[in-house]
Image 1: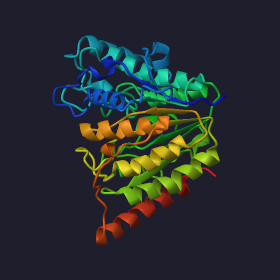
Image 2: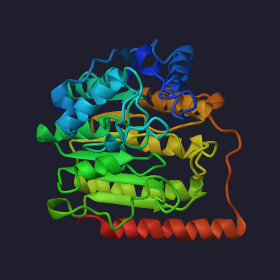
Image 3: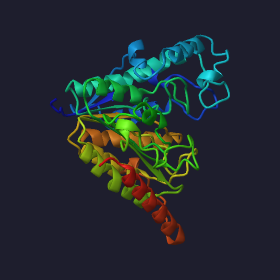
Length: 358
C-alpha cells in the first residue's frame, strides 16, 4: 500500500445537527467551530487539505462489531424515543438518551469514519480526520458513555478483516473500553489507551492488568494516569509507552482517537493537559510512516475543542500553527504536587510496559 500525501477533513453540516438532549454535555455543534476556524485559516484552500463528504454506514458494517438485535433496538428508539430501551443502555435521563433520528445520525457519524478509512487505504490521503467520530464506549450490545455505534472499533475491525495489523492509540481522558473489548483476544489490533485512572472517572476501567487474553495477551495496553496530570507528566507517559510499543508492533495502519477532554478547561474530567502537550503527541502521529485514520471523541469545553482540533488538523497538513490556537498559560505543577504526580505517572508507565507483549 503506497502512502499518499495530504489530509482529508470529513465534513457535512448534518454531522453537527443532532442534539442528544438540551442539557447534554456532548454537543455535536462543537464541530462547526472547528470547520469554520480551519476555513478561516485557509486549511482547505491548499492541495494539502481537502474536505471529504461522508456516506452512511451500512448494516453489515455496523454488525462487524454490534449485535443485530442491538442495531434493531437503536432503530426502534430512533423512530420512537419515548419507549423503554434501558436494556440496551439507552435512557432518557442517562448518559446516552434515545432521540428522534439517532440511528440515522449515527449511521452518518460512523460512515464519516469509514469515509476517512477509505480515503487513506485507497491511497488518496496520508491521513483523514472525522471529528464527529471516536465514539469508543459503545459495546457490542449496548450504548454507553454518549456512544451509540463504536466507529473506531468498526474501522479497526474492517481493517483487520483485510489482513492488516492495526495500532489503535486512544488519547481521550476516558478509557477506550469499547474498542479494547472488541479486540481483547486478538493480536491483530494493538489497543493503547492513555486516560485518567478509572478509580476517579467513567467508565471505571482501563487498569494495567486489563492486558488482553489468549492470543491477545499483552496487546491491550492501559496507561492509567492520576488526576491533575499536567503537560510534562503526560508527554513523558506518552513518549515512554506509545512509540516503543507501536514500533515493536510494526502496524500496517495507525488509528487514533483524539478526544480533547484531557484539556485543563474540560468540565467533566480532572486531567490538566494543554494544547502544547497535544501538539507534541499529534506531531508524533504525523511523523509516523503509517497510513493514519484519525477520529475525534470527548471534549466538553467548546473553545478548547475548536482550538485543539483546528491545531491538530493544521499539523496533519503540515501548516504552521498560529499562536491564537494555543493556551497562553497552561497549568504546570510544582512542589509536592509535582513530586506526587510524577511518582504516580511513573508507576502508570511502568505497569503499562510490564503488561505489554514482548
